[in-house]
Figure 1: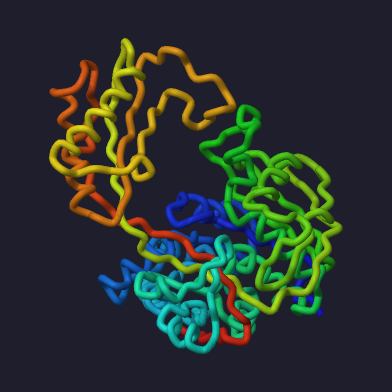
Figure 2 (figure 1 turned 45 degrees about the vertical axis):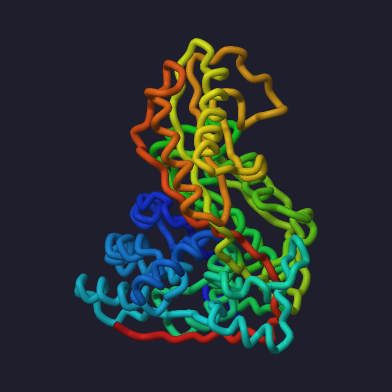
Length: 456
């Protein structure tokens, strides 16, 4: 039997670096049962892994801890539970940091759950030796030759272990690489008693999670009709008002800025979309072509009719690995003849380093002239004579010293290039790592998640 006939879930973070005002305003400006927070992108995991390698107590979303300190008193007062994939590659350290905050606030009896098992970095070799190929889903290559360059390897886990943490009484659930929709689906499974066999319910909860996973991107943010979006500075973050039958309303708190209509919700639905009839998650396969949207009233869109199918027997794995270095610097070039001068500047830089024995093949070079329609190349005509442009110049490769030599020849253009070159405040650029993404699959039988709940 459902614990409730209506559940309010809001997502307050779309990525690590999103505005901290999202979750703070969500808990203060209206009713809520669950606050979910999505912090993880593919590159974020590799950044967190690098941080953990420098400091064994790092590797999680530190923004989450600062946010908890600001919202927890209100969450306790209103009974709001928090579910977040803020644990990154170090969920236990994240829990320890949150526990310190709880003690600092003088709050007693709060339970913090941690879901682990997604991080398979230390198991990669044995898994490969045991037969897992980790074939790149784009190229078909096997991972084994790249093993010594791998920085992180995380399985996209689903909602089931989060449900287990809630069943054990967790007020805050911290996970590693749980999928974005799963942090929303899990509270619905817990409150409404849905099981993984309820395929249409799994799909409904997954799509609810997908709609809110980018935060304000479904309440008027990044919306083509941005001129019609009121009060963007005070844009409300999305709230899902869900029912046990799998229908739900997308809305936002009263009195907040932003806009929720069929167009804003539709725009988010097609975000990161492959085959709309076969959206694969660890929890189910959702059929986006079955979705019915209806404008119920102002800033309220009802979503119904969702159908789903059973999940596959594999998890997706996100692997990141070092793939050489890159260097990019930039200068402003003012007119007249700004574009012609910027092109000359780029030629000068590569010719000068060649004079010093440092050469780059055409495919290693990077030259971009902002102000000439680089964002819409081939779609819209470029201005014939912009008054000023920004030259971005750089290269990639596996020789860090060679790239840094290139970086030394960009700023000198202000005195030894054509006139009108300025904007070198960023100084001399340095070579940085290229982190490449390797998507793969792993049998679900090879992944074991664990749940622990501790009272502070």
